[in-house]
Amino acid sequence: MPSVVLMSISTLALAQSDAQKSFDKLKTLAISWEGHVTTVPLETDIVGKLMRVSLRVTSTGNAVIHEMTGAVAGSTEYGHMDHAVFTVIDANHHTEDWTYMMPGDKPVHAHTDLQRTK
Image 1 (cartoon, rainbow, N blue to C red):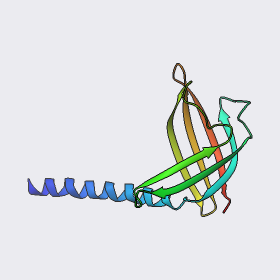
Image 2 (cartoon, helix red, strand yellow):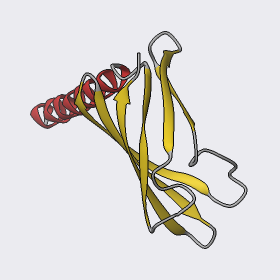
Image 3 (spheres, rainbow, N blue to C red):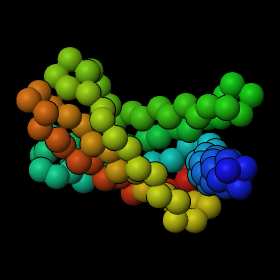
């Protein structure tokens, strides 16, 4: 029985370690970025627009603030942001894939290819 408990604790420690590694990688994006957005389904008022993103580490390194300005940012009156995936390409390039849920749970997927600005 003690070996099972030890194994469970080791598995939990490994999972936390992977989560911490991912969070540490996300914190490396703390700077200003800009890039253009594409959507599925096609949202003609958004596609091709320039997006500006600012990421800041706060709360003594325990949280990241993401601020986006441009065509996608706005009110939650007609839906809400549901899901986000950040993919780090290199120190000067990453992508963000966001799923916005429209009324009736109709998803709009937005992909932004971002380059470091400063």
